[in-house]
Image (cartoon, rainbow, N blue to C red):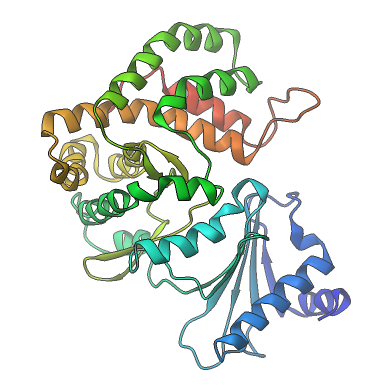
Length: 348
């Protein structure tokens, strides 16, 4: 497929391109050579599985600053397949997805193919999103309890693999490193006001104490998804969930992952739902012999420090310009907002 043919097909409606709120985002999709290579790779890998794309099906493309996503109809399958390409800052996701399918089978999407060097993955359809299940069902503040308990088991299973995760390119933000990461993020962020810097500077000794206390509670670093909201897991069947979209992931304190789903539950159901949700997530960790009191203390510390993890993720995905600070650059305001959350008391 030539670049000219790709353009003709797009114009004819064979490709449906969604740029969302980022019409000016520059992605590899703009290159006809890259499109040819990506589509050629997809067809080659499908052929290795005895599959081919359906000639009559449109290729649906979603372009975002953090990924290129294609959805393709396949002959002989009742569902579509998905191609994902990550930018350099999250190119590790392809290799990570393949490794997770080996280490925690059945809990993540098993890719049909990956090209770890190019940050490409070919994935099956995962079924219904958990968000859609929540939207159509009766309001139930307990709905997140099962997926979070399953996710905790996944994290516990990955503790022995943390060094391998880092070798795959998953960024390291281990608990002991967080004060230094904090210093770098604050120094680099152009959106922080003088008052923000003053207050964050005053907080720095306490932040270091929190990190020491959290590390001292003895819960090993593991994989932090870092963005585990309702649209980042599938619910293919009752009581079982499949986690995906690992581009923000880090090797860090596992309890940092609780912050995003807890915020989603608080928004849907109110703060009264959080204590029970917390205990559902913590229950699998009691198998390691830790007391409920220690685990609750750890998750309270992690709630606060998890804001630093989010700031780190934004800064990594969208690094500040090297030539001059820019408060309007992608991710800078979001990272600053996460840093300010360090100044607020935990919600539980």
